[in-house]
Image (tube, rainbow, N blue to C red; front, side, top):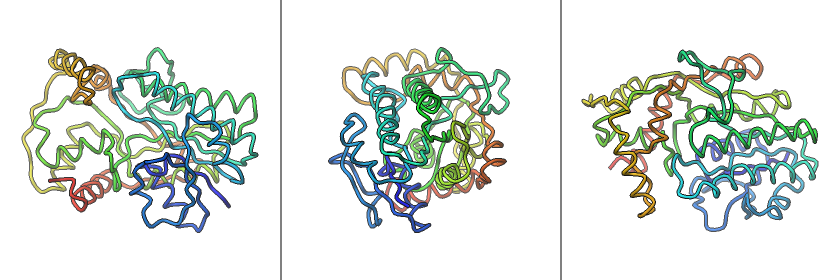
Length: 329
């Protein structure tokens, strides 16, 4: 069985590639010219150069493939040009789905995000049925994932697209080379570069469990359905405690109210527009921190057999990888 994986050089994508190869499946990967391919080093994959904004390259990539795992996305909390992110995450996803449909692919797993889902008002875990609208989604990245997910669902209805959607929570673990915002937070906390924090809640899941969930969705998922791939719901203070337990040193950190950082966020965003450097904190960071981003993976457990390991294992593996690769200097 031939599989196309987009986003294969990235954090979650490379984990999906490894999971497929471990089963003996043939894997083709869509890679951009000049991209960092460290996460694919030594792996038996067929690279095809292309880009989500180049429909012709997508048609070449899907040709002859039985399944498509679409994980490529522009994942940043702040971007100087929102249209570029929307073009990649929404336009690129639509183009790939159409190319896959035209090529007769039998199954597509689209990697969305819990960012595209709703949150409960009382902080209890949300699920796939929790009400959401674009008006309630905070930030360009989350809006792009919401729109892309709606585009996929629309193609399921109108074109019979054989797509299943998975919504990973906050993946943590090895090979987070960029790193992701969550990975950077863990690395900063492990090295003492996080003297203060704004309390919030998030769902931590091991990246390899997210990868396993993608394969389960391909095999057992219902077309047109969404499945949350999460792990443990933790406050940020609890996540930082896991980091301290793994590093063996308890750090004293100041808990700050979000409102106190609003002027700093404005200043950081203003400087970022001038320098091009990613801001330390943004207004979207603070807006997101106001709600507990807790989610339930019960549907994935019930229908797919999804069973994630404890969050402490994910944090431990992330720190071990950062340490082994000189990222905790």
